[in-house]
Amino acid sequence: MTVGPILALNAGSSSLKYALLRNGGRLAGGTVARIGEPGEPEADHGGAVVRVLDELARRHPAPVAVGHRIVHGGDRFRRPTVLDDAVLAQIEELSVLAPLHNPPGVAVIRAARRALTGVPQVAVFDTAFHADMPAEASRYALDTATATRYGIRRYGFHGISVRYVAAATATLLDRPLAELHLIVLHLGNGASATAVAGGRGVDTSMGMTPLEGLVMGTRTGDIDPAVAFHLARAGLSTDRIEELYQHRGGLFGLCGDNDMRRVLARAGAGDEAAEQALAAYCHRIRKYVGAYHAVLGRLDAVVFTAGVGEHSPAVRGRALAGLEPLGIVVDPARNAAGPPARVISAEGGRVAVCVVPTDEERGIAEETAAALRPAR
Ligand code: ADP
Image (cartoon, rainbow, N blue to C red; front, side, top):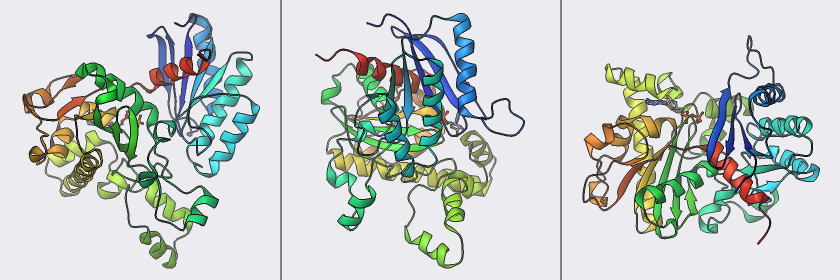
């Protein structure tokens, strides 16, 4: 039970999503987009925080706690952590592992702590859900001394979303989370697959950084590491190669569009490059579903979430096509029906296929409340 509202702040590279929640209800919420882009009002994340807090203060009770999404918690942060100067300094140090992702979160924390002195604030980590992943899944087969020295292992991301969606799936299926084996497909601009056994992440497609795994909007996902050596020897700089992997790969690299709606429209109109991009995107998902089915041994449900996962029957159907021998059978009519959370698999299929909307801000608020609850 919460007395006052909790503010969830979710910093992206050029956006700030926020929500004010009380006792499970959403009092307010929204997104400040295109932060730092030319011609836009907000020059940086700190300014966006000040604006959001001003607007909220005019209409709503003050938050009693603030939860922040931080992408990378490294080895240090395995659960939500109450912020103080020392914790913030450690999160800043982790920017070495996540130079594109942690700095906006740090900027938001600074601004929020300055504006709301005395209000407890909690960092909630995308990596934490995967912290208990078995070593055989989290280790790269790299020289052990080097891996230890530089913190090189698979951490996994999208954990706030996956935790929330796994719990919501248990509710949807009316079964205890503790007995479910799930594959959660978070398909947004970033995309990942996670194998969840009894509410615990046991394998996940993103690695040391959110670059590994599925084909994404602009990220390559899995690619032979030797491609980077080859390009470097051909004269491309490290920055240029990273740019190709992070911002010029994925759907965008394959067909010039990173928005799945555009890719689908073009493919539907017979555009060959868009069709190939879509085929590669769905093939990669299917491959991970098969792999994680094997990792989990028994599979109860495949769960789609985030922008593409929640809204594209075409991608859902195509990604799981041909998996009928594994007991995964999508019902076309259920797949095409509208939201919200629902089962889209055929009657009698061994594996449930589900669409479950994610809500990262609610996940942040729930984890924040739990972190501030007095220890039992
Ligand atoms: P983020 O990862 O930034 O939170 P979202 O989860 O909102 O992003 O997902 C964004 C992606 O969802 C975009 O690629 C967009 O094209 C896709 N998307 C949104 N609506 C649809 C739709 N109706 N059909 C297909 N793709 C969609």
